[in-house]
Image (cartoon, rainbow, N blue to C red; front, side, top):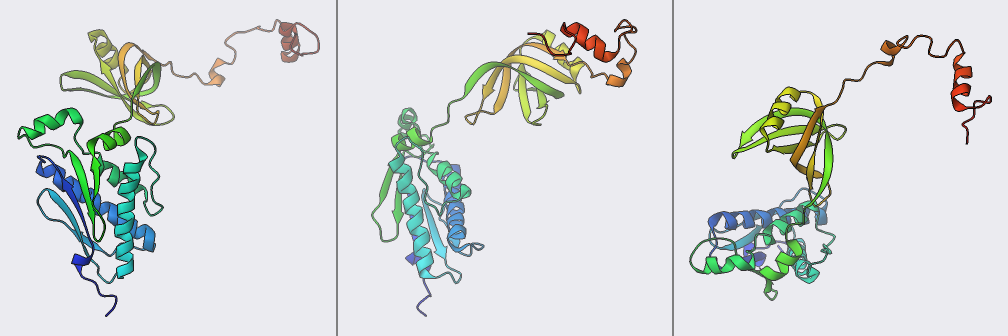
Length: 283
């Protein structure tokens, strides 16, 4: 049949250059296969059928077992994967213009795959025999010229986003105190957003305050580290922890200051404190 294809007709090969550890190879293979499935799903608008297999050496092979998928669809998946790698290389430190067939999963997997490349300063250690991250990717798509992506391009484009810090306070419920890695920490569930924010304690006095505040709504002030997307990550250099007073229902305040208006009606009293007889705010 014309639609029948063999797995050898559609292969994507990525060579991880340098001395590479097995975990990196397995992770790279997994990222590639998940990305290919996402591309197929976005192209066909149905559950992915193609099965991709890989070998267990430092070359990541994704070999298609079509399962009834037509040859032109398989070719399109490979072409789109190649285009995705090209877009990563062309970005040159700027935002990647992903192909429309790349959903969030494919984008994330490609970022993870190429983001495993070694930093330039660590390559020398790798060449001395220590297994580590690959120095470059050689991408082979069936019937197309190889595509080289080296560490410089990827590091500039896909390096970790810069974190920023600012003086700030976190308002929420202190619901966990722990000691991990020799550091005293507590966790706040931020009021309103319900985000979990880790707070690092460096003073014994603050640990006592934290224990007293466990399970209560507090405000902690310090240096807040923000993630690249602007959301809070961790609070450190904490100077103060104070428990927010429990709000008093308004009904309980009734009659707490007798004769406040001096016999005046509420309307008359408001006019008096505003300084005129109309009740308007004075200039």
